[in-house]
Length: 221
Image (tube, rainbow, N blue to C red; front, side, top):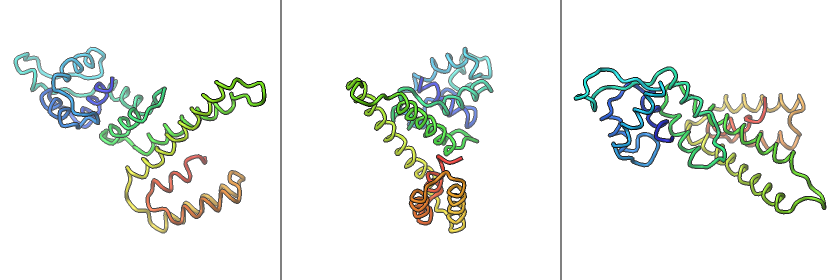
């Protein structure tokens, strides 16, 4: 399945022949470890049957050089996959989604990151609400629940770091000031405590990248 979406991401950047797709997969361009060119034809055939890819021309002898292009259905399937958080969530799956999102024209990688971040936070909230404490709790289930909570928290922290890595551009003083003003407004409206405001203001005024600022506002409407 990963190869399917790696090929769709490459085709989203423009039509390509099977020969070129094979070369790009061998070079690791699809976000996956280098793959053999022999993976291309069977996967493309499968994508064509699903209506996600179409190939022009009819000369079988020129098969390696016929160009394939992604269809509207293929673009929709790729976008849906990029914005769907894997279950169970793994670092490798999310890394692949972010790497491929960077290759797809018109895709906002930061928005993709925030979609996954919100999904994982909702999973943590469901786990917290469903956990029963007290002397009657099942110890095995409680331990498993805490293990999953801490695992999801670690992935969310990794996503915050990834957000800053994909946008290394430094922010200006004006951008820091706007973020600080937004935080003060949320405090006025009761969404932040005074301690939370002080902590986030300090982080906002020392932020280096746009990703740093987005992390401070990601859980606020």
